[in-house]
Image (cartoon, rainbow, N blue to C red; front, side, top):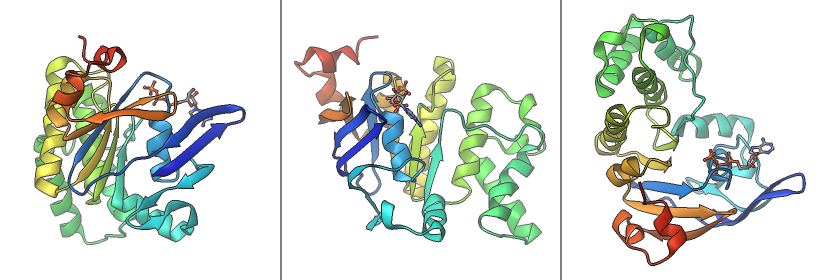
Length: 237
Ligand SMILES: Nc1ncnc2c1ncn2[C@@H]1O[C@H](COP(=O)(O)OP(=O)(O)OP(=O)(O)O)[C@@H](O)[C@H]1O
């Protein structure tokens, strides 16, 4: 992203966003509520359009992509948003079949079954296959939500507050799952979080956003030891 700006009416949310995501890294974005972190990652998959600047994903300017190219982009860039809900009336298996059939147009029953089993193993829930979402805990639902995205084998993952609303132990499990996605599938990720324990586990690099701009960048340790009071405030428990 280079000099990205985005307003909603008179409300300038992003002013000058500059960001690179390196291959294979986990980049954690910190920032107070309402500073534009979610807006930033929504631009990447064109769920929102930027007003100014350049935004290239896999070398292509997102604004110039056709509908067809955008669909392709959204299979290569997976996202797990806070609101990512499972279909309540479908079993876990049906929830996972859905993207395979609809997006990848896979019809072969054996291939569907194999991909579903593989992904459920990856998120540690092989026995959930025939359960309904209502039978799962919040942490399990998050894992299935992640499975539904990972099943498309994305190269980049965007996580918007993946541990919000979960207890500390389940949060740690989700953070570790993010690490295993990086190690197992070599996924590059952007992780928005307020959960400093999640940042500590997952971050290779961190950026701090304030009022529509990035104001600091470094490793967890570098930012934790910053002499700036604003930066330090994120690390106080
Ligand atoms: N579609 C939209 N239309 C109008 N305003 C929007 C829209 N999306 C976001 N905003 C505004 O943009 C601002 C930034 O929102 P955003 O969700 O990016 O914040 P955030 O930094 O992710 O905060 P949080 O940590 O609370 O999720 C908010 O004031 C929000 O109201």
